Length: 510
Image (cartoon, rainbow, N blue to C red; front, top):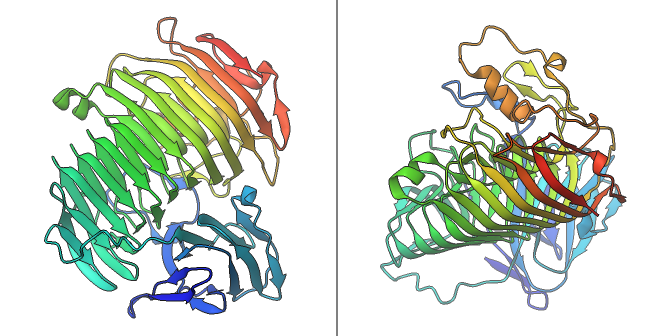
């Protein structure tokens, strides 16, 4: 660990000697070198039903990331191994203004933040995680209730957390394993280092951070790299805070970012997620509902996060909604540098009554639309890049036989700024070739639910980016309020720009 400037209070962490550094970027802070790590990420938005083997490597690529702590202004210099033809620093609304000199980039940074450097397109990007300075001085590393991992490599396997215990992964540490806690209270998972599940096969260990029936947990600061399935899962939990964690290297099938399952009083803030599948999803699973009678999911806050989605949805309720009620849910002050199918989504495919949900101050940038496929099925680019989709329907994921409702959903200050403002619409099945010799009996339904949002028929044009679809006269979407929705700086106020079916009532746009 090194502090390169007392005035700016920058803290750098030495990487383990065994760790391979990035081939694409060199980086300096105030003229001192910073280690740049590698992570495998999705190359193209290609998915399929679990085929019994993990995703092929040729559908992936190597990205880079680095982390450090700052307080005060610092000077960053990045040197590349290629000519800089185009440069994007996302989220663009951060307003970082770089200077380009030959094959180097220079800029100033004055506060903790998470952002991405893209040179000549979004492939092989550099992810920068600038943390606030925090020494975790209140944690006694020698306490028997503290699982401490110092700088270096650790082969930990499954780390089990009991009540009143802490996992502390220090800066400069790489811990190969997962963290699991069940029926516990008052736990912490903190630090600056890396938790890595790359050596674990799907189904061979709990989720990367798996919390079941946990009350009062705090997760802060660490980086999670290369999960084997869903990354962070809170199942039947209460009072969980997730703050300033970073998820990178999610390339395998089913690698959701953070899944809130049949839980309540959950806060996610200041967090970066680049995931292959859904970024942040709130779900009601039938097993949890029946076994534990957890019939209300409530008081969920997602605030000040940066979210890059490589296949599914960014901010998602569903598709599993096997719970009586999902309510009091807030997504605010979030930045979406890239997304694919849908940015803000409610798929109510079970019994759930979903109400009182807010999306406030959300900035959305470019959809990824190259080489989109499910298996060998090519998906037209126009069936992509939706901003808001709310739907009630039976789906591939449904476990209930009854349907639910959606009521009182608010959207305000939603900004969609596209580099390439082409029309993005929803086409029918005749636009897509679906391979015929597929053994999986529900393959067509899987494609329908993932691309065509329940095969909903909208009374709208293909250029619309908002779609609302109720189920029938007893299972409707009602009271949808959209205020200050901008596309490329132009305010949208015409209700005809919203696609909806006959089971939608009381939509207001202003």
